Length: 139
Image (cartoon, rainbow, N blue to C red; front, side):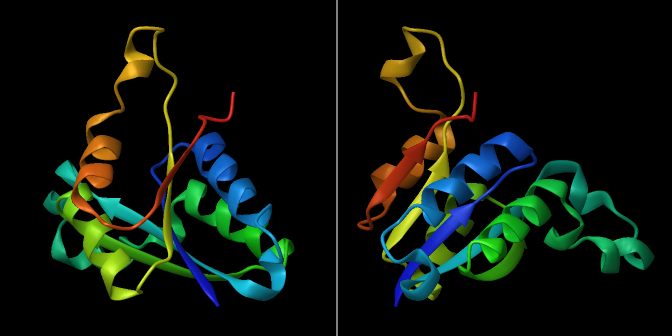
């Protein structure tokens, strides 16, 4: 089985672009397992304890839409969430699941900015020995 980690943020179009990439892999329905990862950052740590039970990746629209798309394409999907440093969490989960690849979503950049990836993307590329694919932003 070919395992891919698909870290998504709250952008639905970007998450669907990542999901389409995974679904387009050869024999995706039979041979690919996708793990969708959503990392809660910043203000999400300030949620009162009685509401933390609702802080799950399944409540994030981009995660639900990517999961539903992959399931419709026959790809096995697991959803995970974490809190903290996005780059560290991506690398740690990739190691935990022994991912064969990480599929990141790119953001639209100016012509000059295209020469440099975003900070999370660049950090993941530089700090993992796993193959990293950067998809477009869906536009």
